[in-house]
Image (cartoon, rainbow, N blue to C red; front, side, top):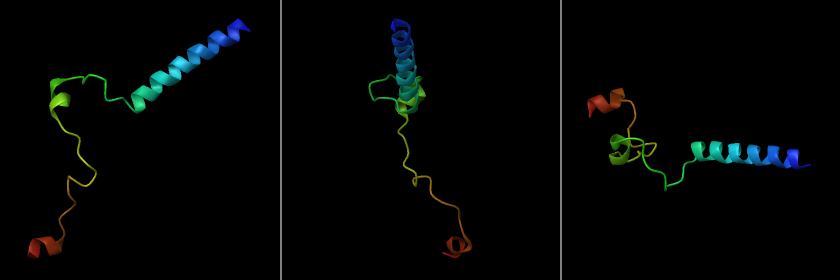
Length: 57
């Protein structure tokens, strides 16, 4: 039974590691200076594609 418990503990640790990679906490340090000084953009902050109506304005 202890073998099963050890395997579950290893799997739980792996799951926690993968979850941290997918959704990192705010407590983690950035990988680089650029990452530390760059604010994340919202989905619509880059704008869209120009259309013919935009050109006429």
